[in-house]
Image 1 (cartoon, one colour):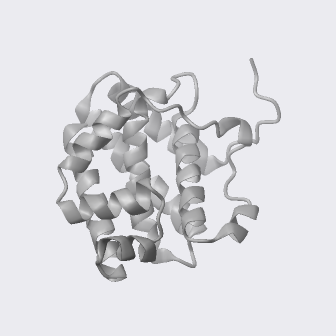
Image 2 (cartoon, helix red, strand yellow):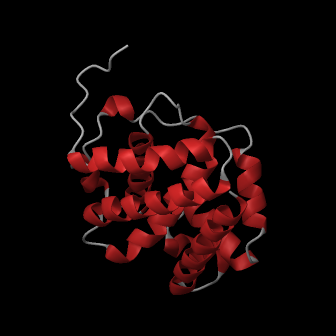
Length: 193
């Protein structure tokens, strides 16, 4: 069944798909080295994708890259081998970007075109059955302050000032804890595959 009015892929999308598809398919079959390779390729593409869209807020790019990589890990079972890997990854990145912009009160930016991926390719992936369990296990590996900061800002959707007020920590401490926690989660995901 063909997709109606699918936009043509850009050359960079085609190149990314050519590079990401083989290791991602091997990773999907259980190859841990291929999974690390695919995550490295994905991180570079996500960084470029998000840097363009957060040009006015460059200090937020790396946190969002890490958050998106974590989402890719948790939703990896929702990838349909019949669909392009790159479009699936960018759809998740787009959803994370929209969530990020909403959390930061940037609703006006939601009316701007965010990417070249057509809406028919942007179906939200259904959470994998073990995703919540995996996420809880990963979060338990974090120090309490990092875990609390991530849960409040990323999972509950509180703003940094709200999280600071709830925990009694400063806003800058919350930002640091989120950043460090996301980096640690990304490292744990890479190690555990």
